[in-house]
Amino acid sequence: MNTLTKLALGLLGQNKPGPAQGDAADSITLPAANTHGGLPLMQALAQRQSLREFAPEPLPLNLLSNLLWAAAGLNRPELGGRTIPSAMNAQEVDVYVALPAGLYRYAALGHALHLVRAMDVRRITGYQDFVDTAPLDLILVADTSRMKLVPVAQRMAYAYASAGAIAQNVYLYCASENLATVIRA
Image (cartoon, rainbow, N blue to C red; front, side, top):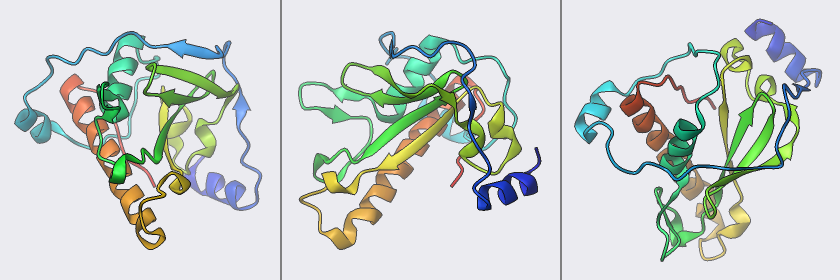
């Protein structure tokens, strides 16, 4: 299905998720993230790029674990601190992972994925064709009601900043591991 067809179907409310491919586990406990190694920061920045071609094979569980930890994992467990900034530590941005078997929410505490829907939602997360078969699609969702100490007029700007930090962490991790990634809005 091409971009214009997806756009038209989306506008008509006719672009539907596909059935789950394989069995969707209710919960996936991720292996501990490898928080050592990788490229030096300046080299990762030099290699950071947007790519729109992805191998169809699933990301190995250890790479998925590391990617999600880099995106929004706990890096200071004693404080509940994460790898991304969040105004007043509201932690308003959730990371959802669209896999062929289902849609999952990443839980930093416990470092696990929890099933939201056993369906393949990748093709309805955007209009570009490449996302339909990408091994995974990260979806960032802000719940501004968690930002009780942040003035209402500033909540979206702060949530955008947190989402941007998550995206940049993903880009740097992908550059460090020679993985393709692209941000979409």
